[in-house]
Image 1: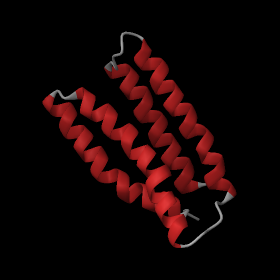
Image 2: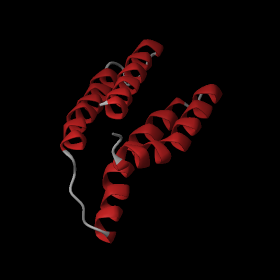
Image 3: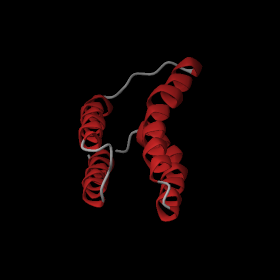
Length: 109
């Protein structure tokens, strides 16, 4: 069963991913990184916070458990960027594969 939070995150992240790809194609790499980080932060703080103010709800165990991989990916991003404050194609590929894996686990699990 897919969590409602996952569906909301997918809906709010899709335009951000499209914007990030457009930035990559145009060579604006900074906007891609900041856009994706900002999207994740907004999903956690903005969307969940707003939803909780409208109607309090309990967070499922699956949603709680997906928080740890997301925090880990954010830490990995910082570590990868620390090497010259650049994301190379292989570093980006690793992050994309981890992100797709995380989504797959959230949707399939």
